[in-house]
Image (tube, rainbow, N blue to C red; front, side, top):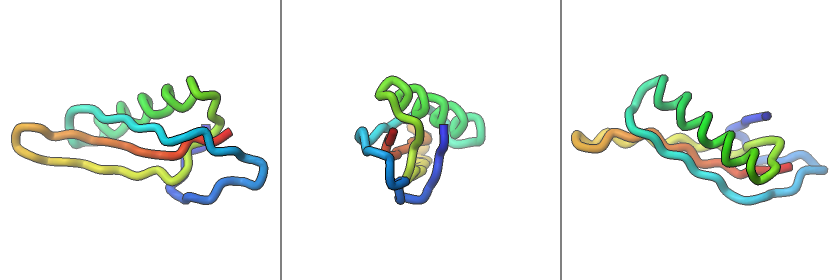
Length: 74
């Protein structure tokens, strides 16, 4: 699956919707886990790519999280 931070979709691609994933932790492992979860959700929609990927890491003392948001396209 193609993953890009750029928001442009290819001419033949159709937007399927926005997918979101959030996991505990703020590190490389949590990023990989969130990306895996995001890809699984996109695949269930029939997506071939994720575009406009955005990363949010919150580091509150009691709740460290890594969240990813992207547009699924096929």
